[in-house]
Image (cartoon, rainbow, N blue to C red):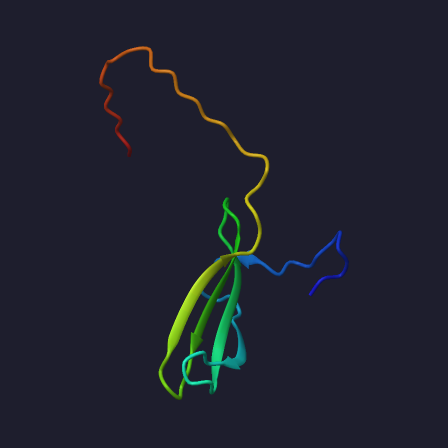
Length: 95
């Protein structure tokens, strides 16, 4: 739900197993009976918003799932550049 175009309510939330899943009745492309589509609007931290959809038909057993972008990637980012000045081999220890 959106209040106005400049201040949308938070519809994409950080990915979490407790996030609410929306279920809607929709037409099966295989048998043309009604099935259920489950939709989850979520946000992958430090990446972007995504829409996860899964369809299942109880009549014929047809299933499909897809992931769609909920937004575009940011126009601003971080540029990393590495200049190698030596051929020494380094060992990194992570504790």
